[in-house]
Every structure is written in structure tokens, then in C-alpha cells.
Image (cartoon, rainbow, N blue to C red; front, side):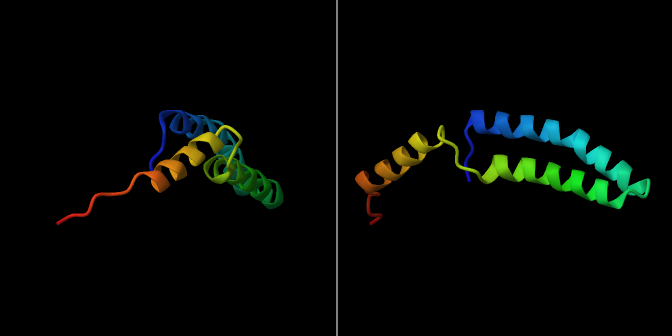
Length: 79
């Protein structure tokens, strides 16, 4: 899936915010706090997954444009 520059920057920012949570979660797991460590790791994973797969209102015009161009423009036949 092709990514725009802005979506790549947004994902990189989310990962940059999730990395300290991952480190804290691993430290808690190693310290014996399994519940806290697991919850923190789950939150970090959800941060990245939501950024990657959630459609936001700013994504909708791009999706509409892609579908419109795909419906209007036909691919030439290869002969």
C-alpha cells in the first residue's frame, strides 16, 4: 500500500511516542509486574494499529478521489 509523505510522518511520530511505552512495559514485565507491563504494551500496540488502520476525516477526500479516478479512467488494453 502506497503511503503519502504526511501519513509516513504521522506513523513515524506515533512510533516515536510508542517506543518509550514499549521500553517501560518490558521493564515492568522483567520486574515482575506482568499486569502493568502487559497493559502498557497493549496500549503501545493499539497506538500504532489505530494510526495505521483508522480512517480519519482527513483521509476521506483522498479515498473518494482514488475511487473516482479509478471509475472514470480506464486502463488501455495491451495488444
